[in-house]
Image (cartoon, rainbow, N blue to C red; front, side):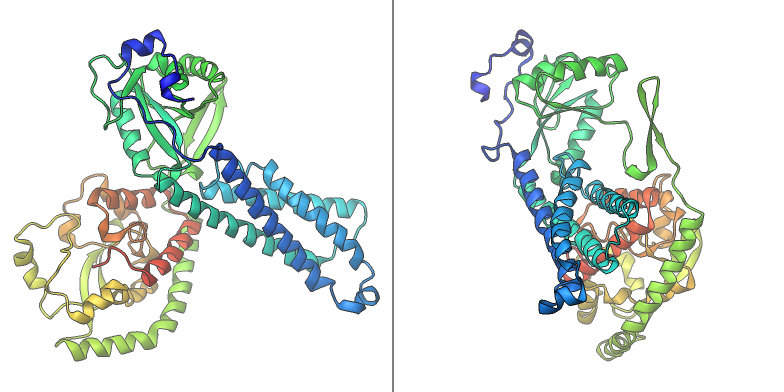
Length: 496
């Protein structure tokens, strides 16, 4: 149904904006069905390949199958049943729900829980019926299946993100709340296309009368008329953010009113840049209370991080020792001066340390900085076309080769493999209270900023990513950032 043949209500006639939301875009069939079908076919192919490989490696020995393993024929049926049960378990765990497809961590967590639950149940059943399930068969099918399913989901997520960046497969969203909170949420949604929310309008206190649009988005009505607006404008999601009117009773009434529209209610808490593992929801007399765990700056996790840093940095250093020596020689040959550049940077808790780099600039370049910047040194200063950088230095910077000597800083304990980049004292002196939180963790050889756009990001975006890392870091997240760093080194973007 299009906007032209939807009869507006009295409230919508009174508060209607000058420009109506754009009509729905995307395929004629519901996009949710499309992405669910893709995930189903991917799962079916992945688990079929996994159990087939387990069977072939364990039982398929040609004419000798009956002599070597009489139960080989049984495992044909077992493999078929296991594949069907695996696909079913992935569906029952909600891993193919349109709400989580393409979301990343939650989707993969549901895949892991479904797989672990299925094989755990199979082990219990085999124990109770005294059936000796071939361990070598499971040892192949289980890990191959996990890798194949998650790999398939990752490829589908990449495809979905590209389609959403083109404006396809979006959930038409109505944002409800106070003007400032609505503007902030719309801004965040606008820069995160892969989440799949397309804001078509907002509802504010007082309605549309004499109110300017929010970030170019029309005001469709009052907060109390959110359900009516959702029905009139064919909305998929109603997102409620901070507002004096967002009381438990009002939210309950809105949820009831939305039942007949088919729109989903999403409540956005007044929390920003807090990762899901730190959030625990506890019901208190029917009201969900969100508890926020404090960030972990000490403890066992940091001990494990330190062990991980030393082991991995040592292994990498052993691999790159010869290339480092070659690069150092090239630096000496192409530019007068030492190959190694040292500079004092500020580390964890404001403690200074000496940072090592391969010299990528001409000698005495630091003395030219004030003239280059004309005294305008900001918190994150880095000239895009720095004339002090040598020709070899530009190549090393493009592929981050000049940073490799910092592996020594990691082994010494001055730095970590992952963390905010270390800065000089002049920059740190300009930190406000928020940026000073960067000093709560060790600076890193790479970080979330560096794998999310590097110098192409605005300073506000980069600082926000650094603070997000400080508040929500985890060892698993560090591993993910390092893998993304390897991709950035191979295909560098935003480096200079």
